[in-house]
Image 1: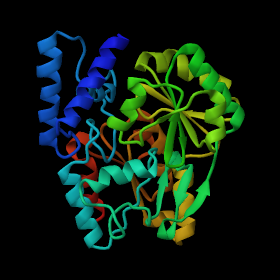
Image 2: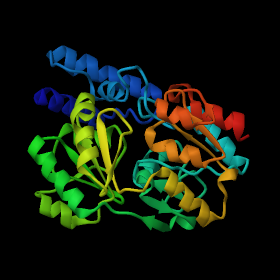
Image 3: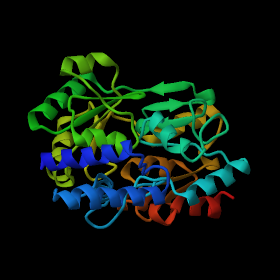
Length: 331
């Protein structure tokens, strides 16, 4: 199984070196996905799916829900959503990103569709809420809040990761660190747009590198549901809490933090009240944010807990739900 994953990752990397790029557009993604399946995997008789299709499958619940808000289930920013955001910005509607991703990952996605820079949606000079509300940037992109995980929680997570051979990625502001040189760790960069993880030689080296805001375990959806989430929900005690945004990942974050708390802090900083905003989300990490906003919109692909607190249920992420919400309620 590991050999198959390594082969898939190698094929994906080689196609990038040959000039294929699935992040440019939907057409280029389809082209690269076909190359992954037809040339090396089928011709050479290797098992498994290409990395693009595997990521698509991983983002899909067993009940068919495809996770994602602004990005679709293939981790792409659609041209329809891009057009809606540009039109909203041109009409002086302020769009602020609140995400579980690190800021460089969001900039990386938006740069390809000309939505970065001082006049764009996101940049190093714009406000935003990142890493599940653990990093908040205010006017001129200045950091106004940062919350780190307890070091004992981080150390125990590293120990658990090594003992159970489950890849773990730590997020330290704009950087990712890991103890594993593993295809799943690489997929955080190649599929989910995060910075490429620096592989650390030991737990001590990792702990000494920098303050850690959040941890992400990467396993099968079944492993996360049946083993990891129950264990860490109990083991963390009051020192941390668990967040799950996709089926095959489990995040460990400081207690008392969320996107909602990060957005609330940013609103206070900007002099804006919750009555003046609408928020769009799909995952359990969006619940507090949707409850805070005057208008909370859960996309059709969202989890039931999130839909329950929303004022409106919108279209899914694969149906350009963000664009539809912008046109219906913001313009």
